[in-house]
Length: 69
Image 1 (cartoon, rainbow, N blue to C red):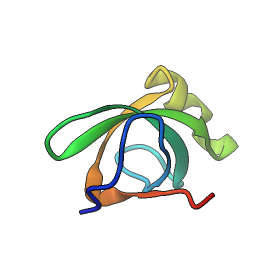
Image 2 (cartoon, rainbow, N blue to C red; image 1 turned 180 degrees about the horizontal axis):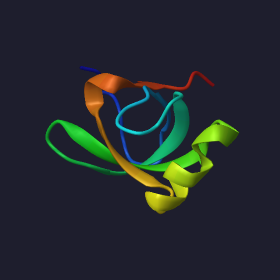
Image 3 (cartoon, rainbow, N blue to C red; image 1 turned 90 degrees about the vertical axis):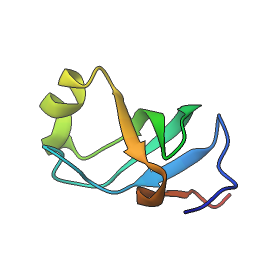
């Protein structure tokens, strides 16, 4: 688990649940083992799911990696 993640970081997140592709988001809130991520970039085929999620998702910290600058 990467502990250097903080609010405002842009991260690559692994697909989960009904999402069929990985996505890029921005951390809005950090919990003990997960974070709330605003979904910024995603595959067009996941549009309905992302809309259902209101463009946010709770993602395990181990399933995300900070986007390199």
